[in-house]
Length: 114
Length: 111
Image (cartoon, rainbow over all chains, first blue to last red; front, side):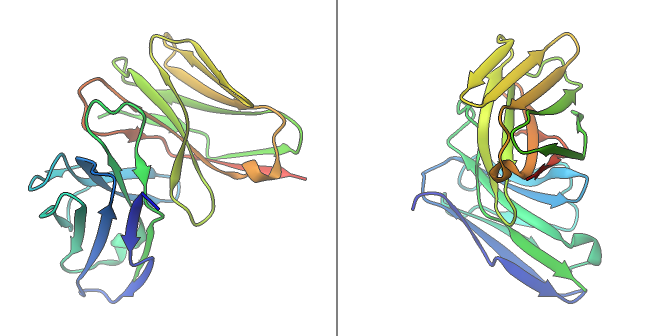
């Protein structure tokens, strides 16, 4: 099925550990996004990419890094996990800036940092 | 930055109408969206409205936009238990690279 696939779906990390979340889309979309969702705070943009090889900071980028080496993949890295990074992470994509009909979202990754 | 506000919770009885409200601060918002998030799932686009429109109807869904008050609402007629979910409004402007989301409203439908 076409769409946005996130792996893993669940993960528990210890403080200080590192990990990478993978987002893959098969719709040939140019734009990709990483959001975090926290109770009562909605979705906040971490980083985004407007094309292969590009990345840009969003609203809450600190503690995260991203890479877009291939058009279909957008990786989110946590170098040294902190309890404040416990959240649900969503990846999204859209075809381009002219695409006015919203984003396609993945099903999320629930990350707990203990 | 943009500020998009929603009430956190709404409870309605099955068969009643639900009205979910959203206010935004950016007067240059040109595209506004409603997303639905079911438990354990990602967000799905429900409907959208452009700033040159006042109302949009799509089956049980009615979107109203008051540009003067920067107020957006989503009315769900004949609310069903399957409508229980979190509803997010989101907005963007022409030429912008991303959407700004509201805090989400958790709709609970009581049988």
